[in-house]
Image (tube, rainbow, N blue to C red; front, side, top):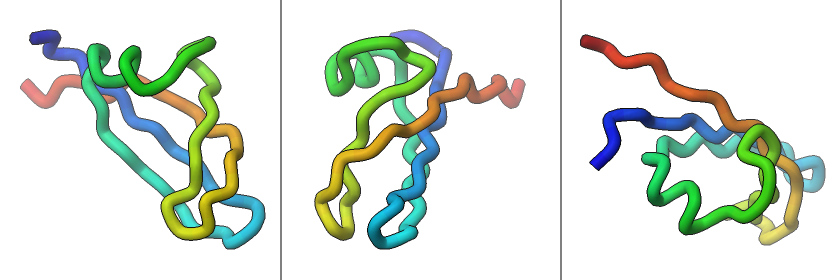
Length: 61
């Protein structure tokens, strides 16, 4: 298992909810296809599809 983690941030333009998810690289590749810098996310509140940004979470060692 990889020690790198990624943070996915997105704000839905329809309902203005914020979604922040922490994913490992394996789970990230499994769920999303395309460039890793900008990915499509489905809003958990209203179901609208929009763009999210991804950034690597620094290790807290």
